[in-house]
Image (cartoon, rainbow over all chains, first blue to last red; front, side, top):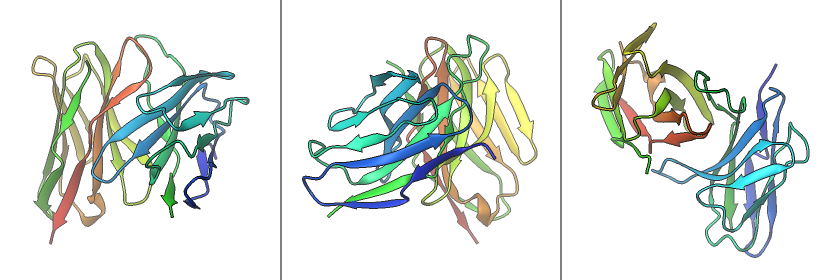
Length: 117
Length: 111
């Protein structure tokens, strides 16, 4: 079965600690994304990656870091510099730029809920 | 800049039709999407429409696109309790492959 997995489902962090959220896909997609979702709000883009060894900041990148060493993996680190990290984090992937006639459908993982204690 | 707007809540009776509305600002949209999010889960694609179409039907779902008014709607016929979720509208621009997201509409089903 092809899809995206995220782990862990729930994560608790003490203030001042860095934590890393895992995202793996076996869809052979080039592009991957990290979103943050807060209650009553839509999705806000943290980072995205078009291709291996390349990534770009999204709208709310401060306090986060990513890496893209393998096509199938795009881990997100929430650093101690992120002032309010408690949120639901969603990872997604899509076929890379499909051209003007292309469908940029994004496929989502099940999410990780991060709580800072 | 690009913007996608949706109402935050919609309440309907079980068995009635639900109509969830979305407006967008960028006329260079290529595809428009409807995603569903159940509590505590990721997003699932429900349906999408290409910008040169004005209607798409898929079983209980009907998508209407008014490109002149930049208005997209999702109609769910015979709404069931299992349709209770947050519905997100998103647009894809021809300038890049990112999606621009609405804030989501929470659909509440009354018995």
